Length: 292
Image (tube, rainbow, N blue to C red; front, side):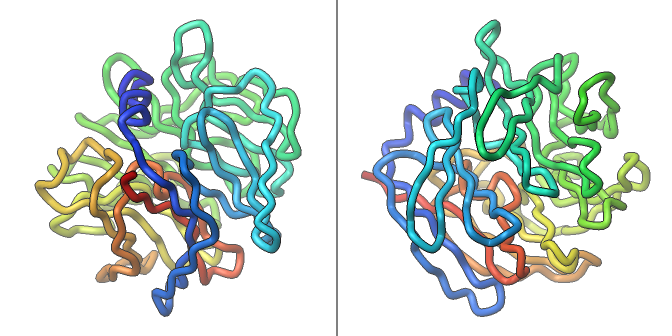
């Protein structure tokens, strides 16, 4: 999404944010904390202790056992959006930051403990969604020449590799834990739907075919299930994922099959843009919202 749209959506969101978790087997929801501002997109750390989220362009860590919130020093990256992921070893944090020179999103990597960010993608806009299990590559959605497709790049930067080239939006690329596949969402079938391809872009497969618009597939750490956000057909344009909508978090087996709804909530943009599975495969963190 372009920065003007992003800022317009955030400015219009006169909402409370509720940081929650849900047990994917029982559907039991737990409210962790309520905020009087917009927070978005929790990442769960691999030690199970913290959730990483963005708010107001900054990055924060929420400690689950105490509720303590710590601002992460991101250096010059002070206009971060909700596309951020942790490295497989959890030593680093990659963020999508809107740079000063043109207000376009570029990807940076910095220590998770905080520190100086280094630029990975020269080209913009680039919106991060996945980090390969071997720690060597990032997967992201990028607009190039008026079309949004999926790309990968070395964590050290350099030339990017284009993986999709279909009319319309391809977004939300995330590696499977094995590194064999990349999951993503695409409008190529008419509605926004959940797809999977090989890590080099070969053999794209339509994994979830339903009368809804599915966004941001997130694979469980054991690779068995995929969670995603579903907007009702007709409630949004297939290529849009706005906030302040009634949406569902759904779960589908990674090898295919019928999906099931695990949560119904008021949310959408910011609810679950990035992977937020707990390391034990049982719980998902997400943000719901309530109008002020």
